[in-house]
Image (cartoon, rainbow, N blue to C red; front, top):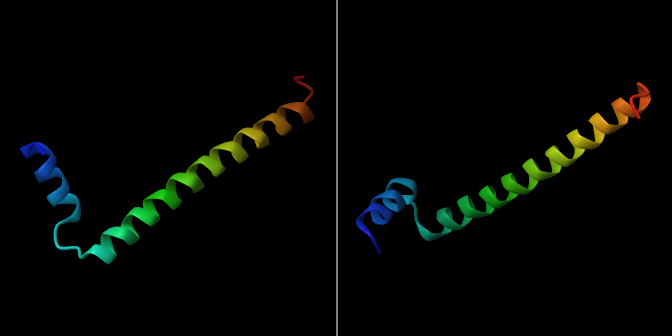
Length: 56
């Protein structure tokens, strides 16, 4: 492991025990999933809005 990787991980996970790190990773994964869902729904909404305005 490079020094840069070590210090980056230490800055992110320093002071956390294993269960806290696992929970953080779960929350990050859920956040990514929710952001993707939001983006998809936003796109659908824009398409519906344009269809109702007669742009298609």
